[in-house]
Image 1 (cartoon, rainbow, N blue to C red):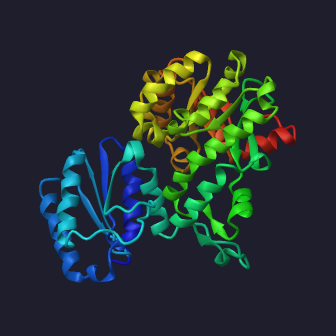
Image 2: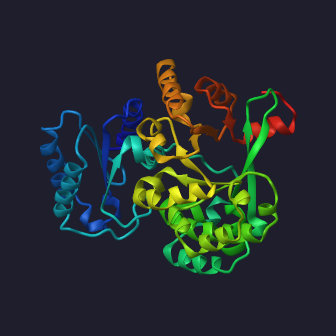
Image 3: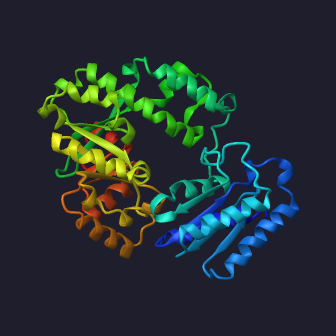
Length: 389
């Protein structure tokens, strides 16, 4: 069992090179009471999966060190995995989780469609295999604690009246059309470190990703209130903000929108995360067309080389799409790069941004893919030092 974590990571990385039809069932045994995580219950659970696996030749089962079970397969309906999860929970006496799972939710299982929403599972696999970055020697990492639901509730209340203007930062998005990158837009975001220092010293807000995601709606509202009162709206600079679809359908946003003239709305891009889009696709189609008609632009954020081929960006009517430079992008072979370039070329009027560019290889990939808009620390440094790209 001790090697299952590494085997799981190697397996999921290998399959993710061709993610079509790839799904996974993550059963969170680690969230159950300790007395339920016994050999008999685990044996029954494994027997249930092995029985189903006789009909699924693509399946692979992993029992991890923390007793979680992950089942990875291809071309299997989500309903099959959900039904399997129900039988597995029965094997544990229909017990409910006693703590949040690896994704911050109180759920017995999670089903992933890898090409669409599999990034959290891959991140989990890397952490489970020990690939997380260790804190520097002599650092004070041990002094920090994870965010919990009680603290989150207090912080959400505080943010309703908080002034976050001092915590609002921006990062340029550059055009590679000329030898020297020129900024064409600025992305505004809240400094999480400043937020932690001001309202919850000693707490890592992003330590539990799904709890943190619950906070982002309140942060979005606070950012809109700051921008409404700032000089940014009087300038002619194009800018973008990360925002939840729920916030775009809120009274806070209506107040923000009512203060803007049509030319000001034309400066604003809303960056909507891919996961928010998938989970709230009906909300997207209900509110986004009207906002686009008003002059706002939309960017689908958080894309990677695995998820991009499976989204119909033309059908979404977005002006921009932000693709992240990451491990998978760095390891694209020539045929995969060519296929991705063709996919990007087929997206019509959508302009692509390659984000998180922190290595020279990322700029090379942007050129190979025909992407002219880039963002990242490397570009910031090159512009600062007046280095031609």
